Image 1 (cartoon, rainbow, N blue to C red):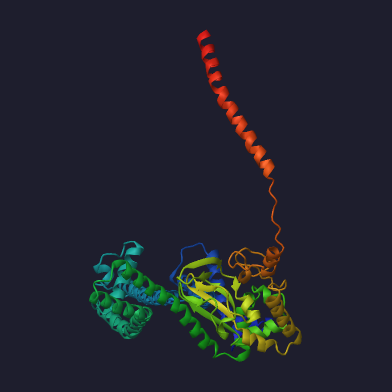
Image 2 (image 1 turned 180 degrees about the horizontal axis):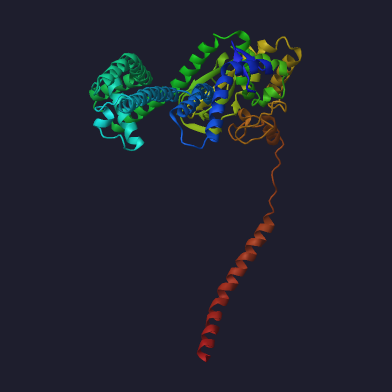
Length: 485
Protein backbone atom coordinates (compact mmCIF):
# COMPACT_ATOMS: atom_id res chain seq x y z
CA UNK A 1 0.00 0.00 0.00
CA UNK A 2 3.04 2.28 0.37
CA UNK A 3 4.10 1.75 -3.23
CA UNK A 4 4.35 4.83 -5.44
CA UNK A 5 2.59 4.72 -8.79
CA UNK A 6 2.33 6.71 -11.99
CA UNK A 7 -0.85 8.47 -13.02
CA UNK A 8 -0.86 9.80 -16.61
CA UNK A 9 2.94 9.83 -16.63
CA UNK A 10 3.23 11.70 -13.28
CA UNK A 11 4.75 10.02 -10.21
CA UNK A 12 2.30 9.97 -7.30
CA UNK A 13 3.83 9.67 -3.82
CA UNK A 14 1.03 11.17 -1.71
CA UNK A 15 -0.15 8.72 0.97
CA UNK A 16 -3.77 9.76 0.54
CA UNK A 17 -3.74 9.23 -3.23
CA UNK A 18 -1.91 5.93 -2.80
CA UNK A 19 -4.60 4.72 -0.38
CA UNK A 20 -7.38 5.80 -2.76
CA UNK A 21 -5.71 3.90 -5.57
CA UNK A 22 -5.33 0.82 -3.33
CA UNK A 23 -8.95 1.07 -2.22
CA UNK A 24 -10.13 1.19 -5.81
CA UNK A 25 -7.99 -1.68 -7.15
CA UNK A 26 -7.05 -4.06 -4.32
CA UNK A 27 -9.10 -3.54 -1.15
CA UNK A 28 -12.22 -5.54 -2.08
CA UNK A 29 -10.32 -8.57 -3.33
CA UNK A 30 -8.00 -8.47 -0.32
CA UNK A 31 -10.92 -8.41 2.14
CA UNK A 32 -12.69 -11.29 0.38
CA UNK A 33 -9.52 -13.34 0.10
CA UNK A 34 -8.53 -12.76 3.73
CA UNK A 35 -12.04 -13.59 4.97
CA UNK A 36 -12.12 -16.85 3.02
CA UNK A 37 -8.68 -17.77 4.32
CA UNK A 38 -9.72 -17.16 7.95
CA UNK A 39 -12.95 -19.13 7.43
CA UNK A 40 -11.04 -22.05 5.99
CA UNK A 41 -8.53 -22.04 8.86
CA UNK A 42 -11.28 -22.05 11.52
CA UNK A 43 -13.42 -24.78 9.89
CA UNK A 44 -11.94 -28.25 10.41
CA UNK A 45 -14.97 -30.30 9.38
CA UNK A 46 -15.72 -31.80 5.99
CA UNK A 47 -16.94 -29.07 3.65
CA UNK A 48 -20.37 -29.09 2.09
CA UNK A 49 -21.16 -27.79 -1.39
CA UNK A 50 -22.04 -24.34 -0.04
CA UNK A 51 -18.85 -24.20 2.00
CA UNK A 52 -16.81 -25.18 -1.05
CA UNK A 53 -18.49 -22.40 -3.01
CA UNK A 54 -17.54 -19.93 -0.30
CA UNK A 55 -13.93 -21.12 -0.28
CA UNK A 56 -13.79 -20.80 -4.06
CA UNK A 57 -14.15 -17.04 -3.63
CA UNK A 58 -10.43 -17.03 -2.90
CA UNK A 59 -9.93 -16.95 -6.66
CA UNK A 60 -10.89 -13.26 -6.72
CA UNK A 61 -7.24 -12.73 -5.73
CA UNK A 62 -6.26 -13.77 -9.24
CA UNK A 63 -6.86 -10.18 -10.37
CA UNK A 64 -4.41 -8.88 -7.76
CA UNK A 65 -1.93 -11.57 -8.72
CA UNK A 66 -2.11 -10.57 -12.39
CA UNK A 67 -1.53 -6.88 -11.52
CA UNK A 68 1.49 -7.74 -9.40
CA UNK A 69 2.80 -9.99 -12.17
CA UNK A 70 2.48 -7.11 -14.63
CA UNK A 71 4.47 -4.83 -12.31
CA UNK A 72 7.12 -7.51 -11.95
CA UNK A 73 7.47 -7.74 -15.74
CA UNK A 74 8.11 -4.00 -15.90
CA UNK A 75 10.98 -4.32 -13.41
CA UNK A 76 12.57 -7.29 -15.19
CA UNK A 77 13.62 -5.13 -18.20
CA UNK A 78 13.31 -7.95 -20.71
CA UNK A 79 14.95 -7.46 -24.11
CA UNK A 80 15.25 -9.24 -27.45
CA UNK A 81 14.14 -12.86 -27.51
CA UNK A 82 13.29 -12.69 -23.81
CA UNK A 83 10.21 -10.63 -24.71
CA UNK A 84 9.12 -13.18 -27.30
CA UNK A 85 9.61 -16.06 -24.87
CA UNK A 86 7.58 -14.22 -22.23
CA UNK A 87 4.74 -13.59 -24.71
CA UNK A 88 4.76 -17.23 -25.80
CA UNK A 89 4.59 -18.43 -22.21
CA UNK A 90 1.70 -16.06 -21.47
CA UNK A 91 -0.23 -17.25 -24.52
CA UNK A 92 0.33 -20.89 -23.63
CA UNK A 93 -0.84 -20.19 -20.08
CA UNK A 94 -3.97 -18.52 -21.46
CA UNK A 95 -4.67 -21.53 -23.66
CA UNK A 96 -4.11 -23.89 -20.72
CA UNK A 97 -6.33 -21.77 -18.44
CA UNK A 98 -9.12 -21.84 -21.00
CA UNK A 99 -8.85 -25.64 -21.33
CA UNK A 100 -8.68 -25.95 -17.54
CA UNK A 101 -11.90 -23.97 -17.01
CA UNK A 102 -13.78 -25.85 -19.75
CA UNK A 103 -12.53 -29.18 -18.39
CA UNK A 104 -13.71 -28.34 -14.85
CA UNK A 105 -17.14 -27.33 -16.17
CA UNK A 106 -17.32 -30.53 -18.21
CA UNK A 107 -16.54 -32.58 -15.09
CA UNK A 108 -19.18 -30.69 -13.06
CA UNK A 109 -21.67 -31.42 -15.84
CA UNK A 110 -20.97 -35.14 -15.48
CA UNK A 111 -21.45 -34.94 -11.69
CA UNK A 112 -24.77 -33.11 -12.13
CA UNK A 113 -25.93 -35.76 -14.60
CA UNK A 114 -25.13 -38.58 -12.19
CA UNK A 115 -26.37 -37.17 -8.87
CA UNK A 116 -29.16 -34.79 -9.91
CA UNK A 117 -30.47 -36.04 -13.30
CA UNK A 118 -30.02 -39.78 -12.75
CA UNK A 119 -28.25 -40.09 -16.09
CA UNK A 120 -26.82 -43.55 -16.75
CA UNK A 121 -24.74 -42.74 -19.87
CA UNK A 122 -22.70 -39.75 -18.77
CA UNK A 123 -19.09 -39.58 -19.92
CA UNK A 124 -17.86 -40.32 -16.39
CA UNK A 125 -19.84 -43.55 -16.25
CA UNK A 126 -18.83 -44.63 -19.76
CA UNK A 127 -15.13 -44.20 -18.88
CA UNK A 128 -15.73 -45.91 -15.51
CA UNK A 129 -13.85 -43.27 -13.55
CA UNK A 130 -16.58 -42.36 -11.05
CA UNK A 131 -14.61 -43.91 -8.20
CA UNK A 132 -11.20 -43.30 -9.76
CA UNK A 133 -8.51 -40.95 -8.41
CA UNK A 134 -8.96 -37.21 -8.89
CA UNK A 135 -6.05 -36.80 -11.28
CA UNK A 136 -7.56 -39.40 -13.67
CA UNK A 137 -10.82 -37.45 -13.78
CA UNK A 138 -8.92 -34.19 -14.27
CA UNK A 139 -6.76 -35.47 -17.14
CA UNK A 140 -9.75 -36.98 -18.96
CA UNK A 141 -11.80 -33.78 -18.68
CA UNK A 142 -8.78 -31.63 -19.64
CA UNK A 143 -8.12 -33.76 -22.72
CA UNK A 144 -11.79 -33.50 -23.81
CA UNK A 145 -11.69 -29.71 -23.39
CA UNK A 146 -8.48 -29.38 -25.38
CA UNK A 147 -9.73 -31.65 -28.17
CA UNK A 148 -13.06 -29.79 -28.36
CA UNK A 149 -11.47 -26.33 -28.46
CA UNK A 150 -9.01 -27.43 -31.14
CA UNK A 151 -11.92 -28.84 -33.22
CA UNK A 152 -10.66 -32.42 -33.15
CA UNK A 153 -12.98 -33.80 -30.47
CA UNK A 154 -16.37 -35.53 -30.70
CA UNK A 155 -19.77 -34.50 -29.43
CA UNK A 156 -21.00 -35.46 -25.97
CA UNK A 157 -22.52 -38.80 -24.95
CA UNK A 158 -25.83 -37.26 -23.88
CA UNK A 159 -27.99 -34.45 -25.17
CA UNK A 160 -26.90 -32.17 -22.35
CA UNK A 161 -23.24 -32.89 -23.07
CA UNK A 162 -23.79 -32.18 -26.77
CA UNK A 163 -25.40 -28.83 -25.94
CA UNK A 164 -22.47 -28.01 -23.67
CA UNK A 165 -20.07 -28.94 -26.47
CA UNK A 166 -21.85 -26.61 -28.92
CA UNK A 167 -21.84 -23.77 -26.39
CA UNK A 168 -18.13 -24.30 -25.70
CA UNK A 169 -17.27 -24.16 -29.40
CA UNK A 170 -19.16 -20.90 -29.86
CA UNK A 171 -17.39 -19.30 -26.90
CA UNK A 172 -13.85 -20.54 -27.43
CA UNK A 173 -13.26 -20.99 -31.15
CA UNK A 174 -12.56 -17.26 -31.63
CA UNK A 175 -10.33 -17.08 -28.55
CA UNK A 176 -8.32 -20.11 -29.59
CA UNK A 177 -7.90 -18.79 -33.14
CA UNK A 178 -6.64 -15.49 -31.71
CA UNK A 179 -4.09 -17.28 -29.54
CA UNK A 180 -2.84 -19.35 -32.49
CA UNK A 181 -2.59 -16.21 -34.63
CA UNK A 182 -0.57 -14.35 -31.99
CA UNK A 183 1.77 -17.30 -31.51
CA UNK A 184 2.36 -17.38 -35.26
CA UNK A 185 3.00 -13.62 -35.25
CA UNK A 186 5.57 -13.92 -32.46
CA UNK A 187 7.42 -16.69 -34.27
CA UNK A 188 7.46 -14.58 -37.44
CA UNK A 189 8.87 -11.61 -35.53
CA UNK A 190 11.62 -13.79 -34.08
CA UNK A 191 12.41 -15.09 -37.55
CA UNK A 192 12.46 -11.56 -39.05
CA UNK A 193 15.43 -10.61 -36.85
CA UNK A 194 17.62 -13.09 -38.67
CA UNK A 195 16.24 -12.68 -42.18
CA UNK A 196 18.92 -10.14 -43.18
CA UNK A 197 21.67 -12.43 -41.94
CA UNK A 198 20.21 -15.43 -43.77
CA UNK A 199 19.89 -13.39 -46.98
CA UNK A 200 23.54 -12.30 -46.82
CA UNK A 201 24.60 -15.84 -45.97
CA UNK A 202 22.73 -17.19 -48.99
CA UNK A 203 24.48 -14.67 -51.26
CA UNK A 204 27.82 -15.66 -49.77
CA UNK A 205 27.12 -19.37 -50.27
CA UNK A 206 26.17 -18.77 -53.91
CA UNK A 207 29.48 -16.98 -54.36
CA UNK A 208 31.32 -19.96 -52.85
CA UNK A 209 29.52 -22.35 -55.18
CA UNK A 210 30.47 -20.32 -58.25
CA UNK A 211 34.10 -19.98 -57.15
CA UNK A 212 35.43 -23.36 -56.14
CA UNK A 213 38.98 -22.00 -55.77
CA UNK A 214 38.07 -20.29 -52.47
CA UNK A 215 39.69 -22.39 -49.75
CA UNK A 216 37.83 -23.60 -46.67
CA UNK A 217 39.76 -21.37 -44.26
CA UNK A 218 38.74 -18.21 -46.11
CA UNK A 219 35.13 -19.40 -46.32
CA UNK A 220 34.94 -19.88 -42.56
CA UNK A 221 36.54 -16.50 -41.99
CA UNK A 222 33.99 -14.74 -44.20
CA UNK A 223 31.02 -16.52 -42.61
CA UNK A 224 32.22 -15.79 -39.07
CA UNK A 225 32.87 -12.16 -39.92
CA UNK A 226 29.34 -11.94 -41.35
CA UNK A 227 27.97 -13.22 -38.04
CA UNK A 228 30.04 -10.68 -36.10
CA UNK A 229 28.88 -7.87 -38.37
CA UNK A 230 25.20 -8.63 -37.82
CA UNK A 231 25.74 -8.97 -34.07
CA UNK A 232 27.41 -5.57 -33.96
CA UNK A 233 24.77 -3.90 -36.12
CA UNK A 234 22.00 -5.13 -33.83
CA UNK A 235 23.24 -2.89 -31.00
CA UNK A 236 23.45 0.07 -33.37
CA UNK A 237 19.90 -0.55 -34.60
CA UNK A 238 18.63 -0.84 -31.03
CA UNK A 239 20.20 2.49 -30.10
CA UNK A 240 18.67 4.14 -33.17
CA UNK A 241 15.26 2.72 -32.24
CA UNK A 242 15.75 3.99 -28.68
CA UNK A 243 16.42 7.51 -29.96
CA UNK A 244 13.23 7.34 -32.02
CA UNK A 245 11.24 6.30 -28.95
CA UNK A 246 12.81 8.95 -26.68
CA UNK A 247 12.03 11.67 -29.23
CA UNK A 248 8.32 11.10 -28.50
CA UNK A 249 8.73 12.20 -24.87
CA UNK A 250 8.73 15.80 -23.61
CA UNK A 251 12.01 17.70 -23.68
CA UNK A 252 12.49 17.68 -19.90
CA UNK A 253 12.03 13.90 -19.81
CA UNK A 254 14.62 13.48 -22.58
CA UNK A 255 17.09 15.65 -20.65
CA UNK A 256 16.53 13.59 -17.50
CA UNK A 257 17.17 10.35 -19.39
CA UNK A 258 20.37 11.71 -20.97
CA UNK A 259 21.59 13.04 -17.62
CA UNK A 260 21.14 9.73 -15.85
CA UNK A 261 22.47 7.81 -18.84
CA UNK A 262 25.72 9.71 -19.39
CA UNK A 263 26.56 11.39 -16.08
CA UNK A 264 28.34 8.38 -14.60
CA UNK A 265 30.20 7.85 -17.89
CA UNK A 266 31.45 11.45 -18.11
CA UNK A 267 32.72 11.19 -14.52
CA UNK A 268 35.15 8.51 -15.71
CA UNK A 269 36.92 11.09 -17.94
CA UNK A 270 39.02 12.58 -15.14
CA UNK A 271 40.66 15.20 -17.36
CA UNK A 272 37.24 16.84 -17.76
CA UNK A 273 35.81 16.01 -14.35
CA UNK A 274 38.75 17.50 -12.40
CA UNK A 275 39.52 20.57 -14.53
CA UNK A 276 36.20 21.99 -15.74
CA UNK A 277 33.17 23.31 -13.91
CA UNK A 278 30.13 21.20 -13.17
CA UNK A 279 27.99 23.65 -15.13
CA UNK A 280 30.01 22.92 -18.27
CA UNK A 281 29.71 19.16 -17.74
CA UNK A 282 25.95 19.40 -17.21
CA UNK A 283 25.53 21.39 -20.42
CA UNK A 284 27.74 18.87 -22.21
CA UNK A 285 25.45 16.03 -21.17
CA UNK A 286 22.21 17.82 -22.01
CA UNK A 287 23.19 18.76 -25.56
CA UNK A 288 22.24 15.98 -27.97
CA UNK A 289 24.93 16.64 -30.59
CA UNK A 290 27.85 17.12 -28.17
CA UNK A 291 28.01 13.50 -27.02
CA UNK A 292 27.63 10.70 -29.52
CA UNK A 293 27.87 6.94 -29.42
CA UNK A 294 29.90 5.27 -32.17
CA UNK A 295 29.95 1.57 -32.99
CA UNK A 296 32.83 -0.42 -34.45
CA UNK A 297 33.25 -3.98 -35.64
CA UNK A 298 36.24 -6.13 -34.60
CA UNK A 299 39.54 -4.98 -36.15
CA UNK A 300 37.96 -1.81 -37.53
CA UNK A 301 40.30 1.21 -37.60
CA UNK A 302 38.95 4.19 -35.65
CA UNK A 303 41.65 6.56 -36.91
CA UNK A 304 45.19 6.38 -38.27
CA UNK A 305 48.21 8.19 -36.88
CA UNK A 306 48.99 11.49 -38.61
CA UNK A 307 45.52 11.41 -40.17
CA UNK A 308 44.10 14.86 -40.83
CA UNK A 309 40.54 15.79 -39.99
CA UNK A 310 38.55 17.96 -37.60
CA UNK A 311 36.36 15.05 -36.55
CA UNK A 312 39.31 13.02 -35.26
CA UNK A 313 40.63 15.30 -32.49
CA UNK A 314 38.14 14.05 -29.93
CA UNK A 315 38.08 12.33 -26.58
CA UNK A 316 36.96 8.72 -26.88
CA UNK A 317 35.55 6.83 -23.88
CA UNK A 318 35.25 3.05 -24.21
CA UNK A 319 31.77 1.96 -23.09
CA UNK A 320 31.95 -1.64 -24.31
CA UNK A 321 34.65 -3.65 -26.01
CA UNK A 322 38.40 -2.99 -26.27
CA UNK A 323 40.56 -0.60 -28.30
CA UNK A 324 44.22 -1.12 -29.24
CA UNK A 325 46.52 1.90 -29.56
CA UNK A 326 49.24 0.96 -32.02
CA UNK A 327 51.69 2.20 -34.61
CA UNK A 328 51.24 0.98 -38.19
CA UNK A 329 54.49 1.02 -40.16
CA UNK A 330 55.08 1.47 -43.87
CA UNK A 331 54.97 -2.30 -44.36
CA UNK A 332 51.61 -2.53 -42.54
CA UNK A 333 53.37 -3.94 -39.50
CA UNK A 334 51.55 -3.18 -36.27
CA UNK A 335 53.27 -2.41 -32.97
CA UNK A 336 50.75 -2.38 -30.11
CA UNK A 337 51.46 -0.13 -27.14
CA UNK A 338 48.30 -0.23 -25.06
CA UNK A 339 44.83 -1.81 -24.89
CA UNK A 340 42.07 0.46 -23.59
CA UNK A 341 39.51 -1.41 -21.47
CA UNK A 342 35.88 -0.33 -20.79
CA UNK A 343 35.93 2.84 -18.70
CA UNK A 344 39.22 4.02 -20.21
CA UNK A 345 39.62 6.94 -22.58
CA UNK A 346 42.12 8.19 -25.15
CA UNK A 347 42.74 11.09 -27.56
CA UNK A 348 43.30 13.70 -24.82
CA UNK A 349 46.47 15.22 -26.32
CA UNK A 350 44.89 15.84 -29.73
CA UNK A 351 41.71 17.06 -28.05
CA UNK A 352 43.59 19.94 -26.42
CA UNK A 353 46.35 20.66 -28.95
CA UNK A 354 44.34 20.13 -32.17
CA UNK A 355 47.31 18.18 -33.53
CA UNK A 356 47.10 14.88 -35.38
CA UNK A 357 47.01 11.63 -33.46
CA UNK A 358 50.44 10.09 -32.89
CA UNK A 359 49.14 6.51 -32.67
CA UNK A 360 46.45 4.64 -34.55
CA UNK A 361 43.38 3.24 -32.81
CA UNK A 362 41.67 0.00 -33.78
CA UNK A 363 38.80 -1.86 -32.18
CA UNK A 364 39.69 -5.28 -30.81
CA UNK A 365 36.13 -6.58 -30.39
CA UNK A 366 32.64 -5.19 -30.89
CA UNK A 367 33.21 -1.73 -29.46
CA UNK A 368 30.99 1.15 -28.42
CA UNK A 369 32.67 4.53 -27.92
CA UNK A 370 31.34 7.70 -26.33
CA UNK A 371 32.77 10.57 -28.37
CA UNK A 372 33.17 14.20 -27.25
CA UNK A 373 33.82 16.49 -30.21
CA UNK A 374 36.55 19.13 -29.79
CA UNK A 375 34.92 21.87 -31.85
CA UNK A 376 31.59 21.49 -30.10
CA UNK A 377 33.25 21.47 -26.69
CA UNK A 378 34.98 24.76 -27.55
CA UNK A 379 31.64 26.27 -28.54
CA UNK A 380 30.21 25.11 -25.23
CA UNK A 381 32.90 26.73 -23.05
CA UNK A 382 33.20 29.91 -25.12
CA UNK A 383 30.70 31.61 -22.83
CA UNK A 384 32.47 30.35 -19.70
CA UNK A 385 35.57 32.54 -19.39
CA UNK A 386 37.29 30.47 -16.71
CA UNK A 387 36.92 27.12 -18.49
CA UNK A 388 37.84 28.71 -21.81
CA UNK A 389 41.10 30.09 -20.40
CA UNK A 390 41.91 26.75 -18.74
CA UNK A 391 41.47 24.91 -22.00
CA UNK A 392 43.90 27.15 -23.89
CA UNK A 393 46.38 27.15 -21.01
CA UNK A 394 46.50 23.35 -21.11
CA UNK A 395 46.84 23.51 -24.87
CA UNK A 396 49.90 25.81 -24.70
CA UNK A 397 51.56 23.72 -21.99
CA UNK A 398 51.16 20.54 -24.02
CA UNK A 399 52.49 22.16 -27.20
CA UNK A 400 55.42 24.06 -25.65
CA UNK A 401 56.44 21.90 -22.69
CA UNK A 402 55.12 18.56 -23.97
CA UNK A 403 53.54 17.99 -20.58
CA UNK A 404 50.76 19.30 -18.36
CA UNK A 405 50.24 18.27 -14.75
CA UNK A 406 46.53 19.15 -14.79
CA UNK A 407 45.89 16.99 -17.84
CA UNK A 408 47.94 14.17 -16.34
CA UNK A 409 49.17 12.77 -19.62
CA UNK A 410 52.12 10.39 -19.70
CA UNK A 411 54.12 8.60 -22.36
CA UNK A 412 52.34 5.44 -23.48
CA UNK A 413 55.68 3.78 -24.27
CA UNK A 414 57.89 4.36 -21.21
CA UNK A 415 55.21 5.85 -18.90
CA UNK A 416 57.29 8.93 -18.23
CA UNK A 417 55.44 12.06 -17.11
CA UNK A 418 58.12 14.38 -18.52
CA UNK A 419 57.32 13.83 -22.19
CA UNK A 420 54.68 12.38 -24.51
CA UNK A 421 55.08 9.40 -26.81
CA UNK A 422 55.68 11.70 -29.78
CA UNK A 423 59.03 12.70 -28.20
CA UNK A 424 59.92 9.40 -26.57
CA UNK A 425 63.58 8.45 -27.14
CA UNK A 426 62.58 4.80 -27.45
CA UNK A 427 60.61 5.61 -30.61
CA UNK A 428 62.36 8.64 -32.07
CA UNK A 429 66.07 9.50 -32.00
CA UNK A 430 66.18 13.26 -31.48
CA UNK A 431 69.86 14.16 -30.90
CA UNK A 432 70.93 17.37 -29.19
CA UNK A 433 72.72 18.90 -32.18
CA UNK A 434 74.26 21.83 -30.30
CA UNK A 435 75.74 19.49 -27.70
CA UNK A 436 77.25 17.25 -30.39
CA UNK A 437 78.83 20.26 -32.19
CA UNK A 438 80.28 21.54 -28.94
CA UNK A 439 81.85 18.17 -28.15
CA UNK A 440 83.39 18.01 -31.63
CA UNK A 441 84.85 21.54 -31.52
CA UNK A 442 86.41 21.07 -28.09
CA UNK A 443 87.78 17.58 -28.71
CA UNK A 444 90.90 16.82 -26.62
CA UNK A 445 92.97 13.76 -27.74
CA UNK A 446 94.09 11.31 -25.06
CA UNK A 447 97.86 10.95 -24.45
CA UNK A 448 99.19 7.39 -24.51
CA UNK A 449 101.94 6.19 -22.13
CA UNK A 450 104.06 4.17 -24.54
CA UNK A 451 106.84 3.36 -22.00
CA UNK A 452 104.37 1.92 -19.55
CA UNK A 453 102.89 -0.22 -22.28
CA UNK A 454 106.33 -1.42 -23.36
CA UNK A 455 107.38 -2.28 -19.81
CA UNK A 456 104.18 -4.20 -19.33
CA UNK A 457 104.75 -6.17 -22.53
CA UNK A 458 108.38 -6.94 -21.64
CA UNK A 459 107.44 -8.05 -18.13
CA UNK A 460 104.74 -10.28 -19.50
CA UNK A 461 107.17 -11.78 -22.03
CA UNK A 462 109.75 -12.43 -19.30
CA UNK A 463 107.29 -14.33 -17.12
CA UNK A 464 106.17 -16.50 -20.04
CA UNK A 465 109.79 -17.44 -20.93
CA UNK A 466 110.51 -18.25 -17.31
CA UNK A 467 107.56 -20.68 -17.14
CA UNK A 468 108.76 -22.35 -20.33
CA UNK A 469 112.29 -22.92 -18.90
CA UNK A 470 110.95 -24.28 -15.61
CA UNK A 471 108.55 -26.65 -17.31
CA UNK A 472 110.93 -29.63 -18.03
CA UNK A 473 112.47 -29.42 -14.55
CA UNK A 474 109.02 -29.55 -12.93
CA UNK A 475 108.01 -32.61 -14.97
CA UNK A 476 111.26 -34.43 -14.08
CA UNK A 477 110.71 -33.72 -10.38
CA UNK A 478 107.19 -35.16 -10.50
CA UNK A 479 108.41 -38.33 -12.22
CA UNK A 480 111.08 -38.91 -9.54
CA UNK A 481 108.51 -38.57 -6.78
CA UNK A 482 106.31 -41.17 -8.46
CA UNK A 483 109.23 -43.67 -8.73
CA UNK A 484 109.98 -43.29 -5.02
CA UNK A 485 106.36 -44.08 -4.15
